[in-house]
Amino acid sequence: MKKQITLLLLLFSTILCAQKLTVVVSNPSNSIRVNETVEIPWKKVISTLNTTSKDHLVVIDSKGKEYPSQIIYEGNKEPQKLIFQVSMDSQKSITLKIKKGSPQKYETKTYGRFVPERKDDYAWENDRVAFRIYGPALIKSDGPSNGIDVWCKRTDKMIVDLRYEKELSGKGTYHTDWGDGLDMYKVGRTLGAGAMAPFTNDSLWLASNFSTQETLDNGPIRTTFRLTYLPFDVNGKLVSEIRTISLDAGSQLNKIVEQYSNVTIAMTVAAGIVKREKGDSIAIDFNKKYAIYFEPKSKKDGVIYLAIVSANPWGDIKSTRNHILAATNYLPNTKLEYYTGYGWSKWGFPTPTSWVEYIKEYTRKLQTPLNVSIK
Image (cartoon, rainbow, N blue to C red; front, top):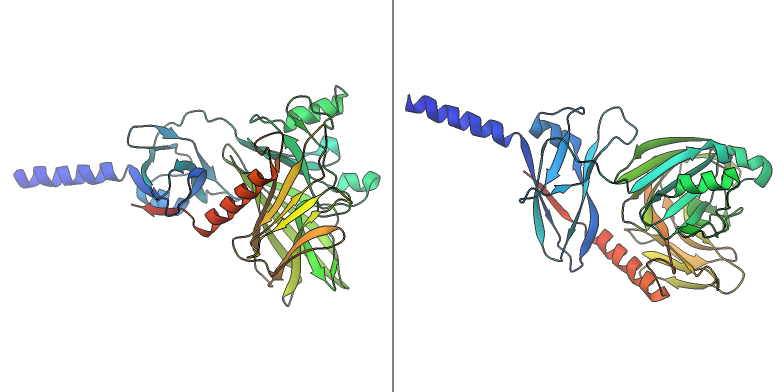
């Protein structure tokens, strides 16, 4: 009888353990980590919790505090990851539990959508920054442009839909700051705020506007979308491009993943920031991890600070007549990953030094990621 009770207790204990997944997140760096995203493979979640994509999950700490989380699909039918964000001091760790439960209603901190009513824009944002990129309907009136546009914002609320509604209804242009920021950045036929293009024979080979778009994930912590581009000329050869962009809550920078097709040998590519004629300045990392550009100052609207960052050194970073370029080799049938974004002197970055320090710290975090142990 005692043996049966013991076996039942062991079985019951095993069942209880299988109802939750323990995650230990450690910060090995000397930097404070604030709202940094942790990714847990979905296969690990379902193998431990015996769950399905339809089940609700919650992430809690030892005191029962719930951490906002998001199931990531990356455009697939089935989940790929579970993500959540943590903050911790240097050289510290935190233990969290993932278990079945009814999650709270989380505040949306990232958002993006296709905007066919504004000539096929795709616009996206988080609680810090906002951007847009141009679609096919704009070519007829403005010509081609595949660069990234900056929408300065100074609110943690989502503003994309409000700005378009105001602009298209005639209630007020988004080129004026109504209290939450404005669009004062100029792209034209350039890479704008950090887009990438093939760079051969000392020339950039720019694609046209995106051809198709697909939203892969959309908040509350991460928004991701995929753009495809029709074949375009690269030094006499037609090359196609797929650009995947994701933005996490709290970050000033997008993660961009580039894929090129019809590339049979290594091809030089460059991420670039468009330069202005005067009044600007440049800061380039000696170790070739980042390039920073300061737009000319506007007495009324302040300064936009931009940056291109990579976890690995760029092959070359240089200033040309029109762009700051961070160049590297693209290898056939691979994906190339880097980061780009902006800060604004009117919200969060009062001086150029504050932006430089943010980018240095961002680069250090890429070099020393959080350690994640799953039990």
